Length: 122
Image 1 (cartoon, rainbow, N blue to C red):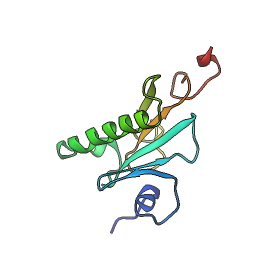
Image 2: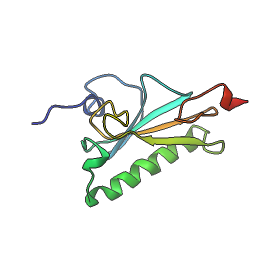
Image 3: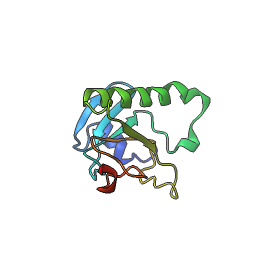
Image 4: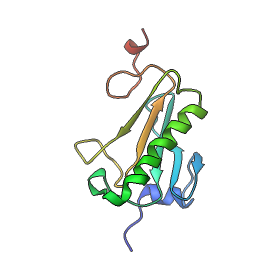
């Protein structure tokens, strides 16, 4: 059996996390190092190391990740003002955990790169 990632352990409730939503395919939880007022991670239950490892069979799952993020933005009241969705891919792309995850950032003006900046709110 492959080694479990941090996200697999969160999905399986083996370690604590601020889980906001979960179904058979997707788990959403708060990022432990938030970069905006709202910073959630939308993670598939299926362990896929990177976007580079996706196959055609994963198309519906990736769509569900995006639609779940949209629903979370609506539920949190940030959809109308806007939000950012980010997939980090690989070491140079800033991917820290080898399990694909979609960052949902919002709740305030975001500067370039997805991080809140004072300049962006002027």
